[in-house]
Length: 237
Ligand SMILES: Nc1ncnc2c1ncn2[C@@H]1O[C@H](COP(=O)(O)OP(=O)(O)OP(=O)(O)O)[C@@H](O)[C@H]1O
Ligand SMILES: [Mg+2]
Image (cartoon, rainbow, N blue to C red):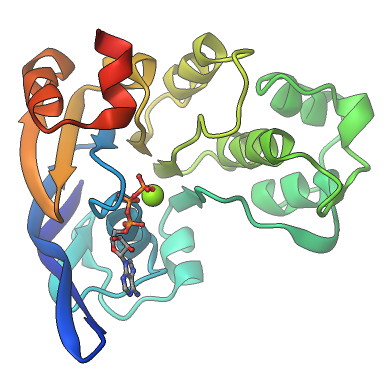
């Protein structure tokens, strides 16, 4: 179980305090899929970065399976079983796709295994395993490779920040299949997409750095529409 307790994040901008997250408390139960949604700038990425240790809360605690994450570095959190896929995937100069997947699994994988991981995200291993992880890969290709890395790592807690961003309509059916295939894991997905919100056990709506509503997609939907979440609005008209 993951618990966020009274998380606030305040930054200084032009000599003034700006509250990005305001006293956010949430509980994530094991094996469930949670989707965090909300308008641009509502604090979604900031919140999930705090779970991975990429940002540090100004106040509040994060407790994962009874262990306080306070002061733990990213790699220490990864060792506890937390994985994170960035909204903007990271490029790794000098590494190839196969190196990344080997690093994620902690062993050297044969072609067939790599093929299974990559075909799950719609990529053919033959074309990709020896490609360098640099700017020559398209945004969507990098995003898929990052997803493949998350799948093969078999973490206890997977965090995906807008996994659909840049991915074509190859697409959402496969993407939703991937989340279902993650088995016993807890998934926290930041998303604006209806199809992804629908697969959530719980949808968390953030607005202005606060939790506006938590519940099933159908329960949260009226709040999304009232909140004029523009990205979602078009999908429900
Ligand atoms: N270090 C910082 N200094 C100033 N403002 C910041 C800082 N970090 C984040 N912000 C602001 O906090 C707000 C929340 O940012 P965040 O990236 O969490 O939004 P988001 O909900 O993920 O948005 P999107 O849907 O566009 O990805 C934004 O207005 C952003 O500009
Ligand atoms: Mg974001």
